[in-house]
Image (cartoon, rainbow, N blue to C red; front, side, top):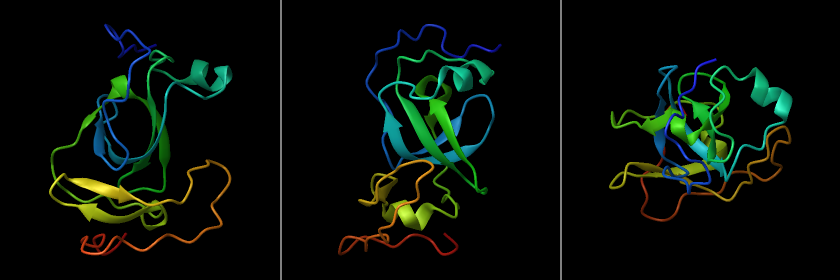
Length: 138
């Protein structure tokens, strides 16, 4: 088992934000945070099968993985901000985000609820007036 949470005390507030592009510290992929849980909400059996087993009592992030169809569930201690400025490409991007705040390098989350396993029945909302649209291909 690999433990990346050494020194992490748990019961922390999210340091990362919804709409932020992040990089995984161990698995070297980029992604976009679509939702955050205050602590790990996965069943114990899932947690025990997780190779890294970071502290459960910390924020856990639902991440749309760049360049794939995957969504991962990652502990805050295993993520860092991605500063490359490259866009994220994911088939669900337009469902949950409706623009980019270029000044703050964040994607703008719409109001479509995140509910893994239960696709939303609401269409994506339109971007706020004056905000740049998402890049083509998303």
